[in-house]
Length: 255
Image (cartoon, rainbow, N blue to C red; front, side, top):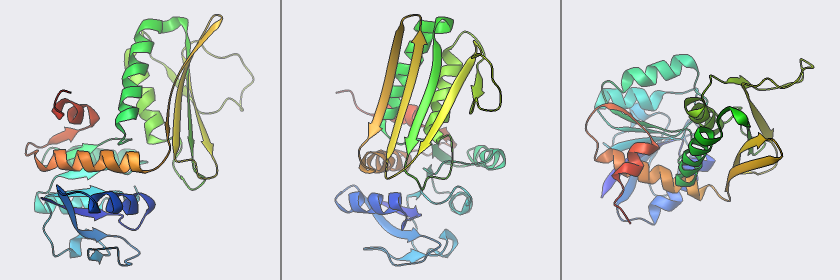
């Protein structure tokens, strides 16, 4: 059984991961870290990973993107990292990439296998439809989500950018200027409200037809299950580098 250290264990996603991990026989959370320091169910909780007495096989980080304490711990103790938080700035992303030169780092803006499939379908659609269709991305999340656009929306934008025959321009709002839509724009629209877990939509609008690809998460379980699967994948990864959902998918046995 693999041992995991969970940062952000008292947050919504941390609690979901804890609940799902408790029902598995292949991974066990041996300790958690959270700035609140409140006890979690079944394992000790520390204010930061530096005070953790247990030695894990992998660290999963669902804490605030403002903190990279888990990254520092993994570098010091040569522990693989599964980084699940989003909203990192350019300087933090540079630190993450630098760390991946020394330890295995799994990073994805979304841990759902369904979202990965959405990205692959969007890539195919962008390749086929090309410049004849206008692309727009819409994401919807609960009222407490602080980063916008979501990490998944940015992943979808990068996917479209790599597949389209032109270099697109991201547009986050059209309010400041009154003008027609540019031919090479991709609009990224963020909706925040209620308890929406996560919804993402990619729309291709052409002449007299619209193609829409979408993914809707009904509970946080889909992200937690994917994160646990990624953590297990990382426990068997020794080579330093930056890993993502594509690497995880390739590791799965054919069905």
